[in-house]
Length: 193
Image (cartoon, rainbow, N blue to C red; front, side, top):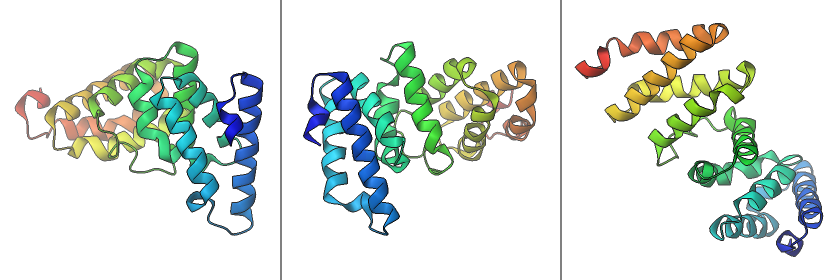
């Protein structure tokens, strides 16, 4: 675990992959690896990377750990989205791929994210780099959560996102049609228009 702090990329990436293999092996043997001391140590090291603005290192390490133990991503969804705005394109795509990898398993992904409006903006701007097959589960999650959201700004952003998908992705229209129809009966008159 201490090698995760090493300066050379080849060393900390190899260390991250080994950590993921160990966690996967523990889970395979029936031990709860996500409550183990090793998981706690790994989680703290990666969190420290995020805190020390080594986001690229944190994302690269998470990607390698997640190759064998994808459940590790669950602990970092909020941090990933919080830092997404500041990332360059390569790491932005990496961050979105990490979240997409677990999006089907974390049904409450958007409920746990505090800057929900920012999240919808990021999804909307990153939509061009996400394949239809990978965007579809996100559309289902956004479609379940945001049309009934308490905040009208969040609902407005969600409807804008759905409109963008409807206009630009013909193959995904069926997944946003119901949410757009819900928008026509939104309690806020401005959103209905």
